[in-house]
Image 1 (cartoon, one colour):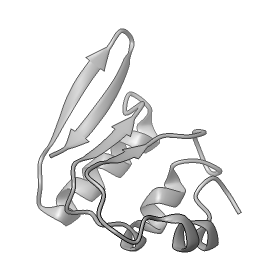
Image 2 (image 1 turned 90 degrees about the vertical axis):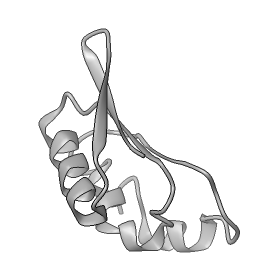
Image 3 (image 1 turned 30 degrees about the vertical axis):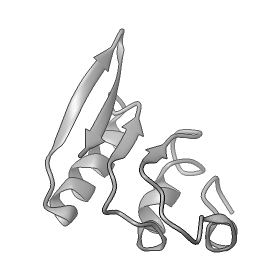
Length: 87
């Protein structure tokens, strides 16, 4: 099922608006890739923060999402870790 279950997202995402998406959770196959897989369930018109983009998979995800949304992303370093924001 993974961290981002389609059934749970469909049931639990707010029916009204939200102001930000924060993508976090376990890395690799069980983790954040589920957000990208089920991105159509989210309102992507809000700022999106993706944690740990110093990791290859997360960096690839923010690059692909940024291209699809036609919105640039910024990288913010935090010690040896980084997070990215699509405004």
